Length: 454
Image (cartoon, rainbow, N blue to C red; front, side, top):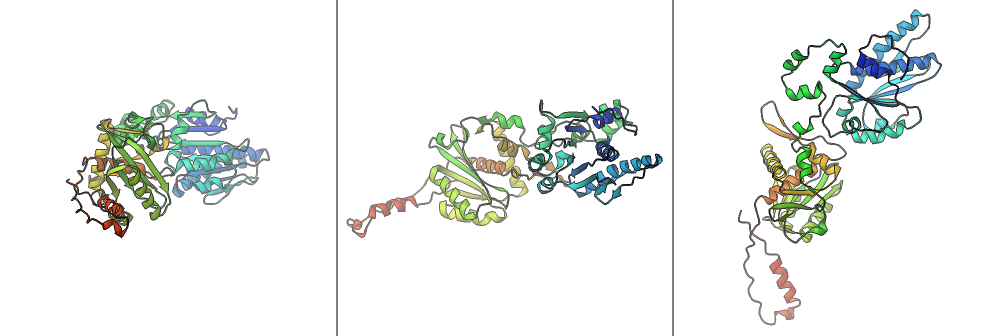
């Protein structure tokens, strides 16, 4: 811990943060408790100290977006440096920072820059870093992968601050780690008030009028279990070590869900085999940025390897042609297109969740990417009261596996389809002289399309 005391009066929780000189430091602060003010104060003091010693410091603030980057600069860095500049002048020290919109450069060459965060900006510098509201950064894991090697140079520091935003992001991983060299700080509204912050807790809680808002923004609770459509408890309860392995296929009836890819989203084929009354995952095929021809080949392979009774495919938008082509190849009674309207998604998600709740599914064990995908789907209610389902898009996908899973369950919901056919007439004696008559007769029978009775 540094022995330098800040000149500004700070609450104890703010002093604890500013004076903690750990190389890797992370904190959760309740809303409106001064986390940006506090974290940018450390940056300003560090640069001013370096200037006094004839050294240079380089700090980069990565914020959720440009607006947040501007706020960090205007409401934090510039405010502190203006106060420090006045202090220097009081001691007859000629010091005035040069200030641009999102960058400050001190006379001795130290700099503080604020930028919107993305994987590209995270790679483009070598500096000390402050990740501001990191739980809300889009694609936080990709940003982290790009960023961490940048601060690997000895002596560079990393600061991470945020309020919680569920468990599906890198901030949660960092904040809940242990014995990994990180210094962790947590200041909820109760601790802040106990340390002297003037807030009326009961008045704020009643005024919020939303238990989830209060729990997350002020009590710093991880709310995924309340807001996620599929809580981790449901997901892990359906995991099995034998699921997801094609070699365990027993030859039973199979039901398939296909989520059509859109640019960087995943193309997913989900295969269930019905064993007794339980749907076992036999295979999950995932590809990114492949052609429609390659998608068709993968689906045809599934129909060859498994006894597919029914396949449901996302027919929305670009899915129209893949569905039409699959119906032509495999029969319209075995391939059904599903338009992702609000009502259809509600039906799919409701049936999908019931499968997890009833423990009628077996999914692969220990796949963190699959868990995260299934867990990221959230049900929200719009201004009109109509429920809809949303999921953040990141490097792990856009809940593509989840919708493929739900489509496969939808395919299974109709039960097994009786195969009806009309026997081919007997072939005249001698027909085989025309060449390969037996093979042609078998091919003819194989092409007879089963007719669904549901």
